[in-house]
Length: 167
Image (tube, rainbow, N blue to C red; front, top):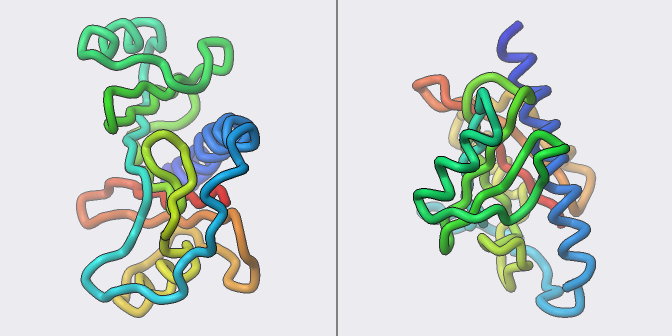
């Protein structure tokens, strides 16, 4: 049951981040419009921007703590109970009451500024590689579609990993 809640919470967090960042990207969509790659180098997948999504008890307290470490609010809002904090290319999502546990997140197609990458591996190609590597996915992208999609898996230590492609 906990895994179901984590999956649902991961999707909710993902879509909340995606909704905000997509509105940001729409304003800057005139550049970097390229196609995702269709093949993956066996030793290197282009997973895009990396962030960790932290489940926090008190968003205000966590925000103040990470500001002392040099992070600034990049996206989200206190009213929506989440903030994306940024320090150079490091991203930390702070989420209050949205999910239990922490989630490692990758965004194929984006850099750490939510800008489109010139080249990236489409999530469906990544998914095929993961399945071919005999990894078990908790959720999958629809292989018959293109564009935005996500998948989730869990590492051997129980850490949830979300791959969330927004373009």
